[in-house]
Length: 221
Image (tube, rainbow, N blue to C red; front, side):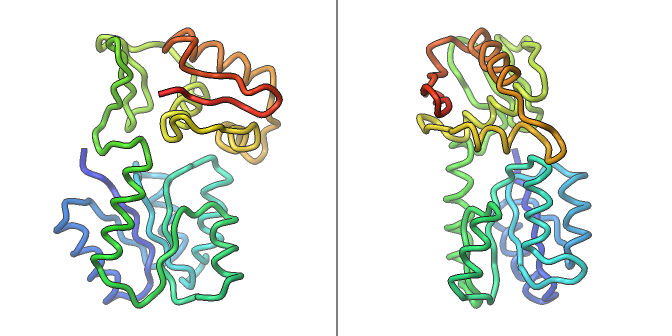
């Protein structure tokens, strides 16, 4: 699978330079010069990682990421910006970014950060995650199969399984899970979550998902 990157940067020369560099490294890059165009791309395309400038026309990188996260999209994001105050960095991480790189930067540094973040997401660049015993999770299609036969799971169950696979052996509290599963205008349901967990356990094995009482769950890899 070719990793697809959304690049939001209004400096035309820098945008073109980063795009060409990443394409030479084998990535597919969708460029945007303003926040509204970036939002359009994020909803229309399958994106694996986002590189976001903050000070861009129509909608700032901060507001763009905020909107994306409200929609439940957990696409890894790196801010590339000239802003360097502690408050700006703190704001970026509070909105859900995964890394921060300050301008000016070396393209090699950008490459290292991109590769590091991609390795943390699913731990693979392949289309499918092998779960053993004939089970495979398709990252792009959000589907679970056993011996190539699709296992019927609902969208929220698949999103929850994807979240577990992105954070193997890590405790995921209810807040993190709720942010991923429910849209901003939906009310999280503890009963529904228990049902999703039950169906995931039935599909991949009960021992794979641990209950951490009163806190959340953990996927055991």
